[in-house]
Length: 128
View 1 (tube, rainbow, N blue to C red):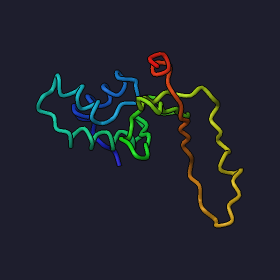
View 2: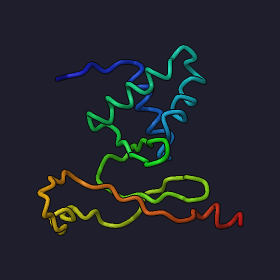
View 3: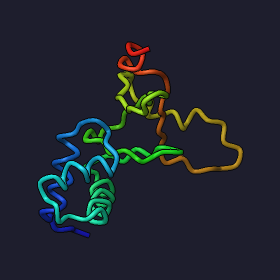
View 4: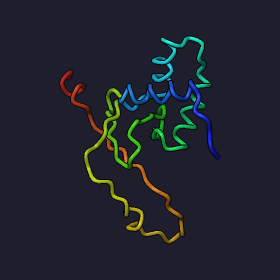
């Protein structure tokens, strides 16, 4: 199914690319609403979902927190600061065959994996 590119969708994609910080939907909304006060949160959420489903952006599921959106769509890993919640890219090769190394007696069908490392970011370390 082909979707048409709307002005709102372009604004959302542009914001994700400009922020480059693994932004939450609220951070993306806050950026867009400054210049386009009539845009709704619902429009932002719908377009983030569509952009992530079509592979234009990457949705990072965050257990116990707000999902994040990444302008880099290739497979890669992330680290989350346990103090401030900041998300950073991790410079390590993606393990594309990791699922094949899992003992799987229940026959679970693996379709991919996400790994988020945790630690303390440089800014939080320096402020201690």
